[in-house]
Image 1 (cartoon, rainbow, N blue to C red):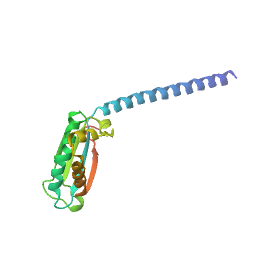
Image 2 (cartoon, helix red, strand yellow; image 1 turned 90 degrees about the vertical axis):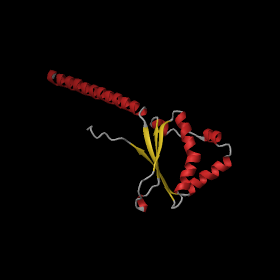
Image 3 (cartoon, one colour; image 1 turned 60 degrees about the vertical axis):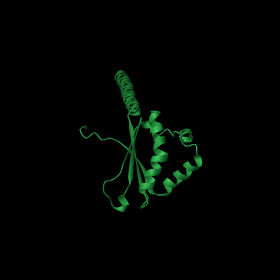
Image 4 (cartoon, rainbow, N blue to C red; image 1 turned 135 degrees about the vertical axis):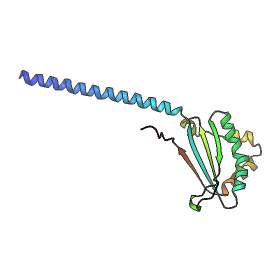
Length: 161
């Protein structure tokens, strides 16, 4: 009988020790995950925006982009939301299904800033007092597009594991 009680006590101790180890390990894992999430919040976050204009309208799209959208992006850089905005165009052409005319790369301060649904209406009203013209030109900028896609980018560590 005493042996049975001793075994039961040890089983209880082992179960308690195992539970404590698992909970402690889980707590350490959570702390590590929280630290990684905090670090990621402060890392720059990159999104590439691809624009494919209808044939013959790339120059018009570029002019409207530079006139109406780029100044808004510059203001957001001044506010510290974005670290960098660049635009690229392919040197040569691709097949129609893979064609894009402009790639705008925006480096945001962090992922939270890139996804915070910032309302740029006040900036737009400040930059463009003639809202009717602004709205017509922005509508035209999107009318002459065949496609537009937003691609969040993550860096790959080729030297790491």
